[in-house]
Each structure stands twice: as structure tokens, then as C-alpha cells.
Length: 201
Image (spheres, rainbow, N blue to C red):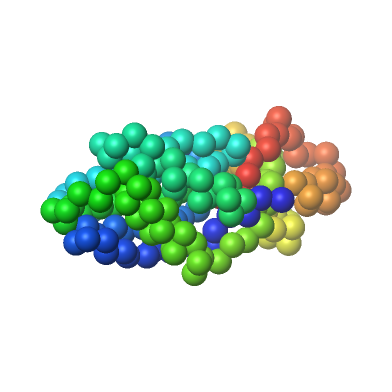
């Protein structure tokens, strides 16, 4: 089973006066990764480069952000792959120090700042989640919330219309027991929507 990270971790590296701020963090998908990279650009307006690599849901992406091709994003992606990670974004903010590092030096610097960050990161099992949608009468909302809590389901969204519409996420392994408990408590008054599988960030 792939691993992800429990929390973001950073590591700073200085190589020939260039400063590399390496960071690894849980990340669900490409959209979340792009938003995080945009935030880093705002946080570090003086940085020369904000390079990144993403492994999430079996998809990968790498960006050198103006560094010579293959010297930043790809080496960081290789570090994530080597550690068997998924749902993880690696970023490296580089402040130019005035000394060229050459292609080999850049690969080493970007690899090292991410590898060093991962040394202190807490790795956790990436759990497959199921996303469930349902609608129910108002009088059952409290009971469904209690059952959700007991079965480790996270409430994603609630809409109060003619009936209550809820969207929840819970481990795939807990889905059958949760829906059975709800159906029994509600005596058939809960309508389930089509479900989909997602993965924990």
C-alpha cells in the first residue's frame, strides 16, 4: 500500500550561496498542487525558481520552472518514487546565490533538499476512501451524524432542502458496515446516491 505524509516538512540547503527551501507535503491532486505552488510564488517574490514534483493517484508531474530541463522537477519526482509515496507534493524554492552550479550540481541540490526533508517526515499508510451521498428526512439527521462519527466517516457537505442532503467520506473497508447501520436505524428512509472511490490525501 502506498504511503503519504502526515504533515508538511521543510528543509533548507545552502549550496554555493544559493538557498534551496525544500518542502514535502500531502497533496490530493494537480489542482491542489498548482494552488500551493502559486501560494509559494506569492510568499517568495524574490525567489529565482519555484520547482515542484507531484505524485498523486497514480499521476505524476514535474516542473523545472526555468532551470535547465531535467535538473529540478524530475530529480525531485524520482525521490518521491524511490520512497514509495503517493498523494505528495515536493517543492523547492531557490534563491540565486550568484554562482552557477552546473547541471550535476543542480540535480544534487534539488534531490538533496527533498531527500533531507523526507528524512524527518512522518509517513503514513494512504487509505482508500469511499465518498457517499444520501438524502434523508430532517428527523434522522442527528442519528446519521452520530453513526458517521462512530464509523469514522467525515462529513464533507450538508444541504438542507425539502430533505437533508449529505456527502460523506469514509474508509472503503468501513463502508458496508456504515450503510448497513444507517439502513437499519432509518428503516429504509435514507436514499443513497451513487458512490465513488477517492484516496486520502
